[in-house]
Length: 156
Image (cartoon, rainbow, N blue to C red; front, side):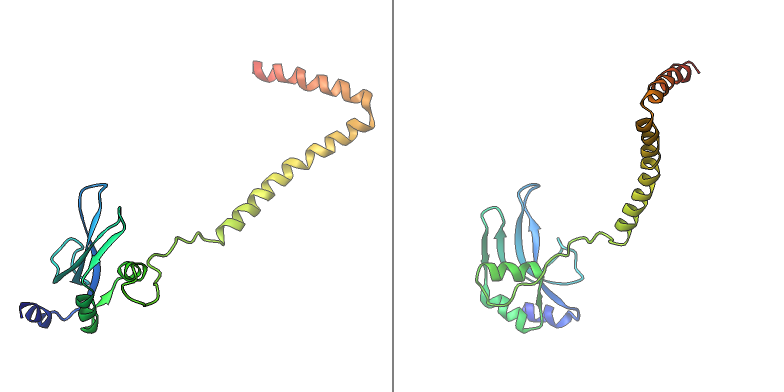
């Protein structure tokens, strides 16, 4: 009777969702009926069951879940998927999270800029090698000149 009075006062949407309990690193969950605007660790209307993720044990009151669903409550995607996995009901699974999508427009532009930056660096190198191959005698004195230039640059 008390639950009916509470239910009559609520004008918002009801959710069947998980409420975390337990210590840090040892999570346990309650399956509860709560108004969707309430805090996750706040008050709930009814305790419908528990879930132990370490042992994968789900204990719920199926008849009470069906009662609240018939009254307009909605199961959260995670609770829905748990109930489907444990064969408590035969509804389809729902996507409970969305993976982050990296922007595709920026990645090709960045690669194109990197390729343009590398192209000018590579072009002068083949041009220098071509004259050295044509005149092998001239290549040896040129090799000596950069070595001489390096100590001068170090001295500066």
